[in-house]
Length: 447
Ligand code: GUN
Ligand code: ZN
Image (tube, rainbow, N blue to C red; front, side, top):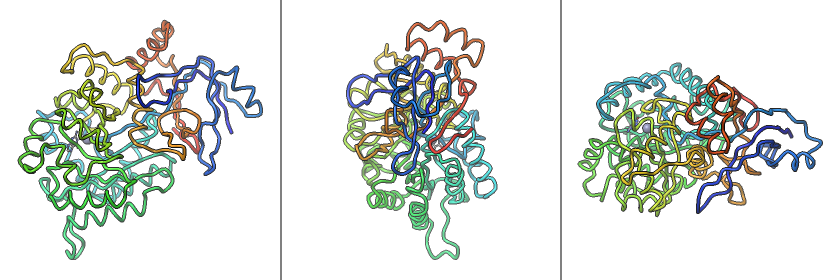
């Protein structure tokens, strides 16, 4: 067991009602192994209360620092690190001119391994301890990311990008060697083999990953839905309703479905642990479909602002009631930093709403990128408690150590904070990787 004395930030259990951040200026966090040997939170609270109960546990003194849950990135593309900052008139030309050419390079095992190492380093440097990530349509890229995350004991969910039409030929899923099995069937067989190889191993999870409906045939989406039914605890990830041209294209290709989103439901791809990136251009029937199927949204504000896609409608999501959390969407997104993402979400909440005047609180923004995003992933202990993205007792001990004096301006501004909201806002507005002094992942320190 090990204890830390520091300021502590975490979240009250949340189902209904307002999000509530908990903060202890002089706190104690105790971590130790659970029955499986994974480091989990044993106790959290005021130093004066907890220290007596854990007097025998060695304590690291981090006073002046803030310990907070590790961030959860609900949607990020590991092969798109090099694509950050590639301008385009919108999503579809951006995919064609920058993203597909870069993703083709991941046919190379060396490029994949180097890219995975850089990507995981960058997540950890920025305080991200859990990610739901896209790989490419090459199985080697999936293996590369899983292997890299496993080496760091990181909680990582990824999967083979399913794409059997409407992309460059050498980026589509490939036929088996010898051509005995067509590319569509092979992509599904490869996905299943990857599930067997990686899903549930250490802290790794598999996500069935159709890129988006327009780049899959009916047969591929149907097969993906069948896999999702057979493996009910694997995740599903895709994109939906991001961009007007994309939506028009999806409607043309799948006219029998009620909406673009409903296409996924019609192929059995909406259920709990299904996470759809963007979810911008929805009507209330789409929102109800998200709610009724237990699917969730990965909100990607820096990407949506950069590509001019539109704005996630928070009021609509809360009124109808479906789950969501924040995501970088690198490389459409412009930053790995959760602080940049939270700030962009704040801008979207202020200016991008159909009902103007919404102002997301700093506690809510932080929750969306930690406990809220963890809840979306649905990793639970036997008591049914979400154990990712928070520091309640029983949660996996993934956390960041923040230095609120990391820059002169941060030091000046955070010192003026007279309440928790002001402190959190200072960090959201001024923070980046410099604020993250250390990232600790369960089973051992890293970064
Ligand atoms: N839709 C289909 N593929 C992508 C992608 O790589 N990034 C984003 N932002 N949207 C997509
Ligand atoms: Zn994306």
